[in-house]
Image (cartoon, rainbow, N blue to C red; front, side, top):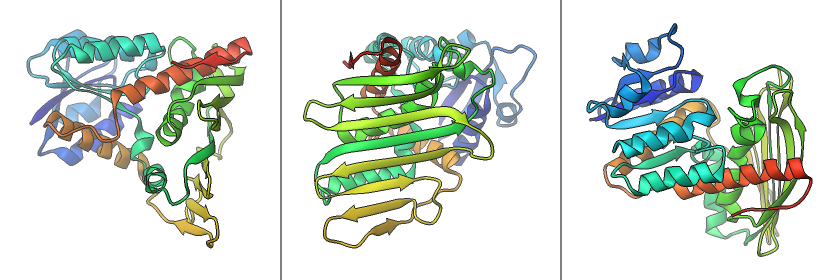
Amino acid sequence: MLRIGLVGAGHFARNHIEALARFADRAQVVAYARQDADKGFPEAEAAGAKRLRADELIGSPEVDAVFVCTPNNLHRQYAEAALRAGKHVFCEKPLALTAGDADAVLAAAAASDGLLMVGHLARHIPAYATVAGLLDGGRLGPPVAAYANRMHCGGGGRSWRMDAEVGGGVVFDLLIHDLDLLNWYLGPPESVVARGRLHVQGGYDYVAATFAYADGKIALAEGGFVFRPPAGLRATTRIVCERGHVEVNTHDTEHPIRVFEEGRPEQTIAVKLDNLLVDGLAAEFEEFLDAVGGAPERRLRPEDARLAVACAEAVVQAARSGGEVGIS
């Protein structure tokens, strides 16, 4: 039985509690930590977890694994400390807000007996996993271009997500899903140019970026917290290959995946679209628990999480400078 301590007690941590309940025979939440001294965490307490300070939780011999669900700027601090304490770590995306900080966490993982895994949820969403399998199968040929768009409500108000130093704005908090997917589908890009709109808190609430690749591929990524209710979340992905293309529209409940293969009729693929958050978390946690037990990583590799951070950092630098920024 893996004994888990949660650092952070926001809405995503509550989803962690719900998803972890599916693994009652393999894992148990035994502790939690949160910054607000006036608030508890009823969902964690109902699962049997006790409240500790973050440093107590990380150092506790009763905790085997630390799940980091804090605001983005604290991910390095707690993930690195937990790894140095010999704990396994599941860290929510992004791994950090700079590539340098991500490298520090990876170095701590390399020096630790603990396992590091980063929650890039989109890799466990059925629609995006289906696209990866289709591309791996080769029926459409190699990718040559791609487009990813992820837009959500939430712009206009104040939030830690829009603080450039805390959440990193839309690039680190929302669009990073698509940056990671593009890396999964196309490989690492060489450089990026970008333009964006700054929120009053210093982070971008809208950005459009164009990535260039060593072999001539091009990808466009657009993200924003600029929609208004009732729009909700709307995401579109298109991967163009030499012999056709595949499209994903997660808001199209009837035909979320469309495949256009040269010389063949259009194909639609139905995949599960409801309860994606908790289902995706559960799939991530299954991979994490298997890896703790000795199984190889499947989709959630720390070096991929580091690349997503490097891409996000480069997008912000390119938007601020107005020039092309290399990615390494």
